[in-house]
Image (cartoon, rainbow, N blue to C red):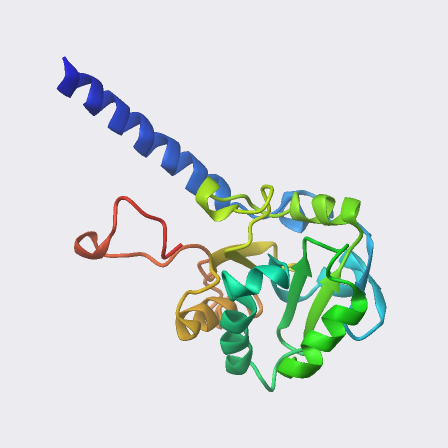
Length: 222
């Protein structure tokens, strides 16, 4: 009886995981879902300029978005990981690719503090450290796919996952912030234009793993 219950529990866990992963890799409810639903929240960059989140930063662009706090960098250095990705697109940042690191702690991460971090660490043009209001950061984050609970260490904000997408075509994907930068760069560059020269739709989503290399207990490579 115990073995039977364990089998049922295992099947339910797998089904639950599949549903979570399927939800995670659906595009945010934007152009691909019948119209823009990203907020027009006014946000501030570390460069001191203000932007409308959707119209100025997202619309018709290939973007890489993740959520972070400066204080969390000592525990999980997501900005250091993202800097490796930024180096892959150094000459294309702000042109083909736009990188946005959005603080989920706008009270502590003031514009001055973000600017100081950017100066010390040499954040290049095309990479913005974004500060929304406390209310707007919740609204903005809710437009992006949610992932497994262990990837949400700070009040439900997804600090260990990176979202990327082509807002013009509605193709979106995600990967772990500490994934190998070369593989992450391939995923982002695959969003250019949304299709290959022969018209075949580019695939967005997790890298397909062979059965022998797939870890059935983890979504670490997602």
